[in-house]
Image 1 (tube, rainbow, N blue to C red):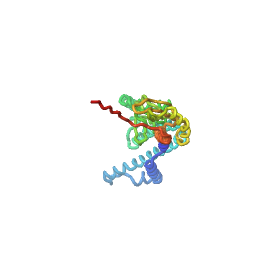
Image 2: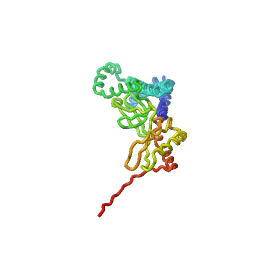
Image 3: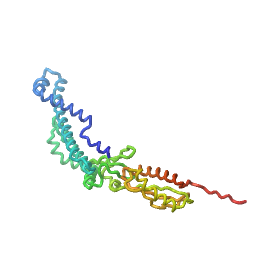
Image 4: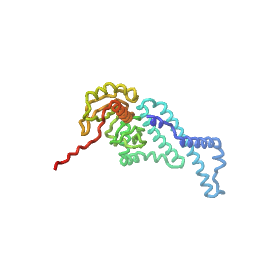
Length: 310
């Protein structure tokens, strides 16, 4: 959960450096506006073709830097506002991430159009042909549109949120981000899985309710079940104080199975899903200590060999 909160930053360090560079170029272009447009980069017949070409593109580069400065500034402001508004609950963080992704796409598209205008492209014709282009793209990118729509419904339905521990197609991990196209999960090993939103048909959300890890421990057939269960009755309540990750329990659930080498006993406890595997390990340790202290035998596989008579 901590990792998911750390991702709510406005811009990366690289973005901030670029923002400062473009800001410096923008400020200098306003300070030396007259010299740039009327003195320094004036094309003339006395200059070579290469010099005139360089003089023609330098103002365009400066205007491009101005556009990029405005773009990064808008993104920084929007990300900061999103971080301030959508914080607290996992649902608010999830909605904030999705809105943030959509705003980034819109801002960068506007930036590209503005840069094309700076370099002399007929932006009006491009916008006028956007209807036909959208139709062509829509027919060729149906899966992308399906991913976007599925992502919006995932967030609006509230079935999946940032920080939830889920299992998708047998892969268990914590939801890092629900974007406009895909959802990212990270597991306990730090591996990241990216799943397209439209492919998430069935999943198990394990964070909404208290989890119930179970432990099975065997005892020898020679042990007296009634005496062993009396040991559990007397000692299990004390284990709760030793294992703070357990929210309720542990509980003795009874005989789970009559195995080949021993009698399997089932134990369970309530905990948060994030502590599921640690609680299992802690229970195994404490039960082993409890069995040893009370001389309860834990069997190992044995083989009985019968020798045929001559």
